[in-house]
Image 1 (spheres, helix red, strand yellow):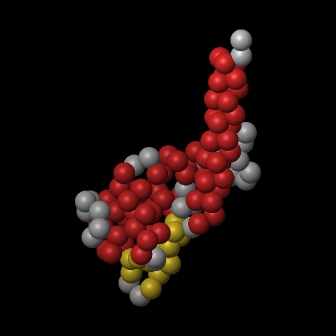
Image 2 (cartoon, rainbow, N blue to C red; image 1 turned 180 degrees about the horizontal axis):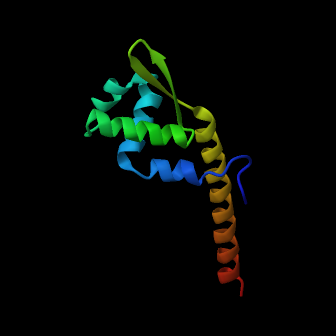
Length: 108
């Protein structure tokens, strides 16, 4: 079972850090936000938030644009949808494996 398109390991690796996960959740809930808005919501410095955002951008989870002197970050939904599809496939496989195990144990 391999997901269609680009591999998902950069996605899961990027979200493995609690602060980066908080950033993505914040952007999903509140929409596009500046670096200073993001850094105000997580327990890190603005410089650390910028590094987290750059890593998320490298993983394809966010994009940025300039608005005046600020950089505004927007979450990208396509990688989230791909990860959701992958996890759904994985869940179906586990459900099928558990069902086969149940049937094997109960046959007698």
